[in-house]
Amino acid sequence: MPLRHFLTLCFVLASPLLFAQQVEVEEFKFPAHKTSVKIPFKLVHNLVVIPVNINNSKPLNFVVDTGVETSLLTEIGRDDSIILNNVRPLSLRGLGKGESIQAMNSSGNRIHFSGIEAKGQQMLVLMENIFSLSTRLGVEIHGIIGYTLFKSFVVEIDYKHKILTLYKPGTYPDKRLKKASRLPLTIENAKPYVDAQITTADGVKHPLRLVIDSGLSTTMLLYLPSIPVMKVPQPNIDAYLGRGLNGEIHGRIGRVESLQLGTFTLRRPPASFPDSISIQHALNLKNRNGNLGADILQRFKVVFDYQNSQMFLTQNSKYNDPFFFNLSGLEIITPIPGLNYFTVSDVLPNSAGHKAGLQRGDALLSIEGVNCATKTLEQILYTFQSKPGRKIKLEIRRDAATIKTTMYLNDVI
Image 1 (cartoon, helix red, strand yellow):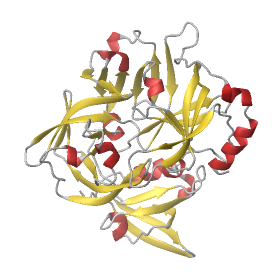
Image 2 (cartoon, rainbow, N blue to C red; image 1 turned 90 degrees about the horizontal axis):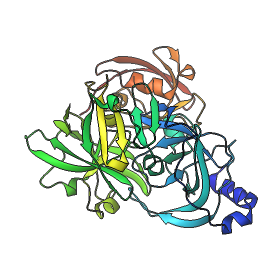
Image 3 (tube, helix red, strand yellow; image 1 turned 60 degrees about the horizontal axis):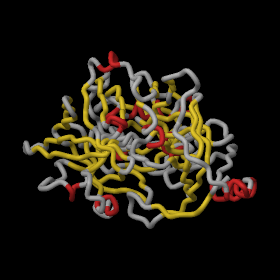
Image 4 (spheres, helix red, strand yellow; image 1 turned 180 degrees about the horizontal axis):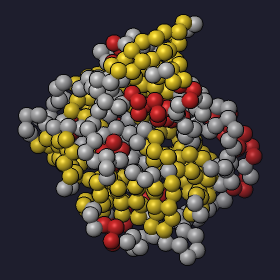
């Protein structure tokens, strides 16, 4: 059911008294006698996904995003139901080339998960499913939660073991920080900022101020006009970088020689450089040089302590893994989330997928002789990102024809 139709239904069902009632905003609270709660999460495209209940809804899948101030309800599944309180329209702006988008602001809601709850919570509801998160991530995604979570707790994200642990402020065990590196944070407008430094191939060091953005699945998004004398590294490629609130984000991708983050040095990570039109609203802020994403964060155990303006990093087994950029050159989606049916939504020019003859709209039937219906999107992406030079036999369907081809994975940057 389209989101706009579903919301109309909910507004009819919601009590008129709820719209007029002023509900006091509460902080998230632990169950009695608890100082911490562990939440297993799904790690999809480097993104942390946890179950969240809104009012009396069933558990909904929310991406944990440090870059988001107000919780977002991005899409509602065909079989889902939710009642939202105190609703009014508004317009939103963000990254992307398009115009502002229409949304609804809902207040006075109860958000609860794993025994933790808060009342009087604000929720923004997008009137169009602009992100298509379920289609792109291969699992049903309903929304995004951010600052409301991080401001209430010390938050530990263990990417290796896929456990998110929330601690009551002041109760985080010091012994868990013995091997950690501390980085100062600045919290401005509900967003965490960290100082970092990149070094380019010419040896020039560029200090950066970055938003820590756990909802960005890649490494870095850098705003070139805000970084003096820097140019897009060579070689680089044109690429679709993702989707912001106001439309698609396009730009170029190239490697920097290193990223210095506290005491850690990460070698040759790719960086995305959105074009000036895509970031015009972000540039008006003049307080940052870009975003630090989850392909960096997932190489650590990360502890966020907003109340004391600090974060702690402990490297995990992924720390020294090389940064490969889209070795297949394919963007794969699931047109029907929950159904193991995969199609190609984009093909990078001169990439492995392009050279193998794949086209937008092709459906994947088998990989190395294994039926794709037995695979998840994450498994397919893992295969396509395994190592440069790997030979992969594919069977695809294009219109009514079945085509066999061979793809040789290649890093185009």
